[in-house]
Amino acid sequence: MNERAAKKRLTPFSLQNTLLACFVFFVLAAVICIGAGVNRFTEKLFASYARENIQARNREIAEVMAEQYDPLNAAFDEAALETMGMYFVHQGYIVQVRGVNGNVIWDARACDMEQCASVITEIQTRMENEHRLSGAFRRDHYFLNNVKNGLGELIGEISIETYGPFFYSKDESEFLKTLNSFLVAAGLVFIVLGVVISALLASGLSRPILRAAEASRRISGGEFSVRIPGRHFTRELGELSRSVNGLAAALENGERWQKRLTADIAHELRTPLTCLQGNIEAMIDGVREPDAERLASCHEEVRRLHKLVDDLNELSVIERENLSLHKTDFDLAKLLEAAAERFTLAAAEKGIAIRVEVSALPVNADYDRLMQVFVNLLSNAVKYTEAAKAAVITIRGTRLKGRCEVTVSDTGSGIAPEALPHIFERFYRADTSRGRGTGGAGIGLSIAAAIAAAHGGTITAASEEGKGSVFTVSFDG
Ligand code: ADP
Image 1 (tube, protein in one colour):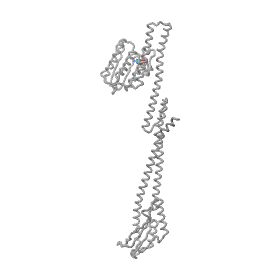
Image 2 (cartoon, rainbow, N blue to C red):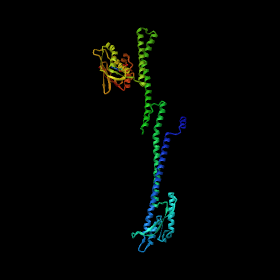
Image 3 (cartoon, protein in one colour):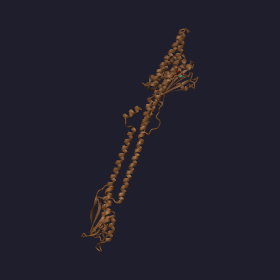
Image 4 (cartoon, helix red, strand yellow):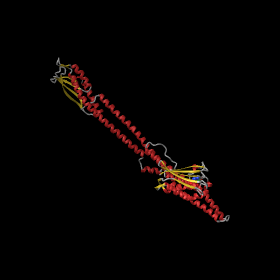
């Protein structure tokens, strides 16, 4: 607990909180910038539209008012001017029509002062409050020309008062308000979505890291069975979990290997030591004479123990440490001939013929280690072949699809089907009594298999009891 508190003090920001804070900051900044940008852009666009619209509306109003001129009477239809004028007042345009000599023919303010004042106040308040625009009513003047007889003579003048520099109609104000509300709502939705997705993402990224840290802590405490479960949505996190799991599995295997090795060694040492102890005690107690034969028997047990220790040492180097191969280019046929040569004498003593049926086979491999493999196979073949008339050991070698394949077959005792799957296991002897008689500790094939594996290869065995065995070594070379 104290350790955790100390760690927290040292690194106050968790990955999850840091990621969350960064994501939220960027989402907020993006939403605010985009929202404000869109708002400014639409307002600018709308303002220029409103400006142009007011100019066009002013010209339209002038035309409409000019149309109320009756050329026959050389006068305006005042009733029509009033109807149209009050209609324009409602839209925010305060109109005054004057004749050619400057006399006022119709004036909106004079007609309905109250209505004009209310329209002016409404527009002024709306523009100031809703659109933060401070302006004032300005007057624009236009000449009125007779549009009816096509001559276009001057018939008067019109002045139109509007809120400047521009103003929005009620509908336009409503539209802008709706647009702004939509932008705010969309912004809020994006912020909420952004925060939720950021929280999920941050926890999705940090949780597997925390799990890996927790698993590593437990592994370092000796819990090698710990595994990080589940799938990860990023390749890197999956890789992290897989490597922690791989580390745990390797440590678990190592631990199991160590326990099994200790048990196996204890088991293997017990028999010769008991035998030695019994013999020596009998000689000390005077029960048996320490003659040459008994001493030779003790010496044989000591020799066997020595060989066992040597084999164990060899196996531990090959199995535990990463077996580093010293690869060179050589002819495998020569190696097989040299290996066979070592056993010619021992085989001849038992009446066994050794045939090497291999033509030149260039390979790139570790000469000494491969020699170890074939010496082992030939030693077994000689060891487990009884002297017989037609006893023969055959070595064949070929290259198949880039892989070298060597078979060592004998016409010996063969291996029982129930023993065959276990012969590559450490300390396994198909027939214990016979194994002891032949002096093997059941390690030779384990070493051979480990060397083949280091070459990216395998050793397999096929056998028929009483007829013989075939060992096949195949490797990349
Ligand atoms: P060992 O030192 O006992 O020979 P190995 O690991 O070399 O140990 O072999 C394991 C067992 O496989 C042997 O004890 C033997 O029973 C069996 N074996 C190996 N090679 C042959 C063979 N060529 N013929 C019959 N049995 C064999």
